[in-house]
Length: 419
Image (cartoon, rainbow, N blue to C red; front, side):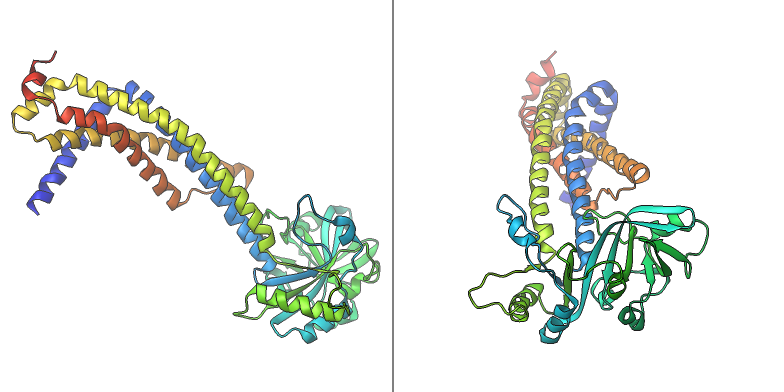
């Protein structure tokens, strides 16, 4: 315990001496830590952006359903070999196929058919909402896709089966069409037809993959049959199936491949005319992209910290030279070599921590500005703060070791004679 107490006292004395040296040379301190500040800023800013994008992407993808498989004609895999001309001629999933798939699937707990209704114009009196995305859905959609309802309710089974003229709208649509009034039970116009508003979705915010419910409206599939042909090749429809609890989506995908081949009466060696999609097909390529961006951030920040490390080493050599006589006196009075070593190492670490804290503070201020002015969920995580501090300490140890070692090996007599 006594040795530990001595070491702690030495570290605290070294820290105070380092602070005194830094405060006494403010301009030199600021210039010498500039490289560390820029390096930490580059690395932590990139890590914060990547972490924020990954979290937002994960939330957006999971809102589709991480345990949901999508049966449609278009695969979600892209690249130079994407055979769009072949996929375009595939048939769309239908309500009849949904019924057969739901009867034959043993691994799914909920299912729904959804049809995209893009670029719609919604009207209420003199108010218009243009370029709105819509979807026609079968009744089971609420069990497949999780969402919160702010006001009102979801479709009843009778409304879905009878194709009644009812609609649910997102919060952004409600704000545009019904400012300062309750939209429930009011009639809005879509494609010249009157729909009664029965529900408003709770605000979700922006989505990286454009699947937010804020600017979306829902109507029953059989209602959409009034103005579109459900089996037309021009519509984009999909069957969504949610896996039972504990069933991996990959296992559900394998089952659906066999079920869909049976439903569409495909022979054993006949090529599939459908695609089974899952959310990992969207998230995995973007994770690889984020990984490349992270490496680039470390490289750019690494160069800045390399320059900063040389600056810290240089300033420490100057500090040793300026305090040579002081070192000689300390050693003549009994100071051990490791005490001198620790003193200068702590000074180098404090220099780097000072630069790192400035870099972290800059990142934090930028995240606050982005949240306030751009309404984007950019954040500085505790893990990235720890990473920034750890990297600062590491650079301080590396850049300060040689100057500290040379100071600790000085001969006390020659050091006191130095001018």
